[in-house]
Image 1 (cartoon, rainbow over the protein chains, first blue to last red):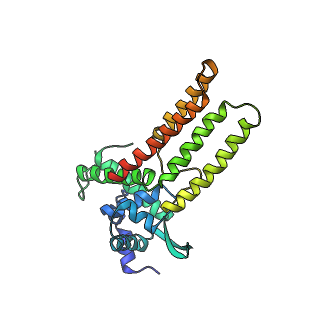
Image 2 (cartoon, one colour):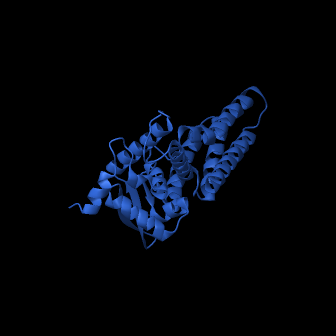
Image 3 (cartoon, helix red, strand yellow):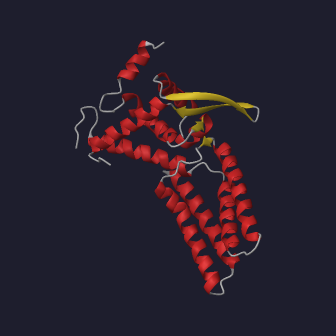
Length: 109
Length: 145
């Protein structure tokens, strides 16, 4: 069931592909990193982005609420790890956002 | 150029640059040092194997391929990044930068040992060094960016 918050976030993706949820700098970096791989472990993403754990958790929550990022829990070396990946919706939204940015810059490639 | 009331072209260009930096980090940084050393050693061994005749010429590449698959999987687990088998995080340009010089050296070494008295072991060592230095240097550069 979608919440008013979800509806608000989903509405932020304009028809031109520009997406307010993804455009926040850290979230853009998260999506750029996830777009190239199948999944990244939370700790691995933390190291790649060089931000605090709480900041990353907050941005992941926003992306997950929008349906852009999904999480999977797995145990390795007796510790539970969280693996993150872009959903199909998230991948399409990220690529649409990048295309929109390129149009704004004037680079059609 | 399209206008957008929310952000300027400069801001859009900065956002695109940020996304590219993030992609470069995923492509290059976070690998354990042994990944570069083991993969470089594998490429060096492949260079050496090209010059071998008989069963060694088949056995070495097979052993190298199996070892490199194992090493790649272990490195993925160590850095917490899981890539697909077909599409990795590196762009075609990244791939050319990493594998291009070592591949050219393998070809040059094979030609050198065929047409001149160039020992295959020297080529193998050069391939190893070039690959490891390229990987470590690019990894450090991406981590700094």
